[in-house]
Picture (cartoon, rainbow, N blue to C red):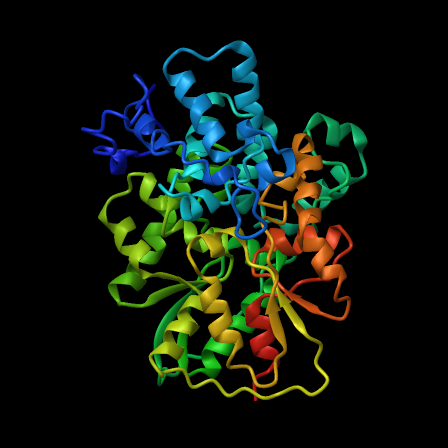
Length: 429
């Protein structure tokens, strides 16, 4: 096979190990798959962490990271049966690309990236649904058009069936991008770049406005990147790697002048920002991509860093009578350890009663919850722990930095979630 992604980081993986079980074909991709050593951590019955959402709802080995790995090895060795291939296809479709295995597996198996390569190899002629999801960031520049199309699809069972969309998950309404006006005065605390990605701009513009207010209140001069720039996350998830590479290159070109000025890149949507630190490096885009990866931080990571350095001067006040807050972390936040940053930042808010929800993936997972074949899994994932724990505290307000997390909880009857930037902006003195 000719790999779509750059797997050279695994070039030496397993070499010299007689027990590495590297498949005969697949090159460095095969070595990435062979990282799994059958420790079976992913099969343990646990109720903590993220790994593995699909195994938790199916309770079948094939739906675990290790089970997928074993089937892919058989496929690359030419040993897989037709029945096993069908099982593997379904198991890969059911992978939400949470990256829980990359953090929690003993050998850091990266099934999310393995899945993207698998989908790319399988989908040489992408479906219309794949193309629409992949190009969504570009389509969002025309909110009226997307809303018109979404309304038509939501009202038409025939269109939902033709596009293989989940009829119980209406396509969301798109908002115009916010007209942000950052101050031009020099920042006493320094200069940063706030990247307002397509999803934040058009589905949660209030989060971008809140983040700008907070950063400026902390004394930073904030530069903005045009929200039309997309990092390629949607296309990457759909296995459309050439499209993702093209989108990512355009973003690199837009970000580079800010990196040259030593400005940190701050992002709000976890999966979008963290692509700069992870998947971007598999697209073979050179040294600039590596420099950008080293400069990219989530909003909460940046603030936590400033707190740790005793540099953050953010005037906050207590709000008497405010409801308790419960925090649900996006899977990718958890995969990079960013929940520690969330806790550190929330601790500085006077009088805030907050706690973290112990739950795996919400089941939204980008386009996953919108896909007809994953509708049942999507809801079951939310019902495992997240929804029951929210139901225990009906007064609590939900902080969820991921757009798909907020969308999933709200559509299943839970509270309307907000971004951590919004809670901070609300408490500004």
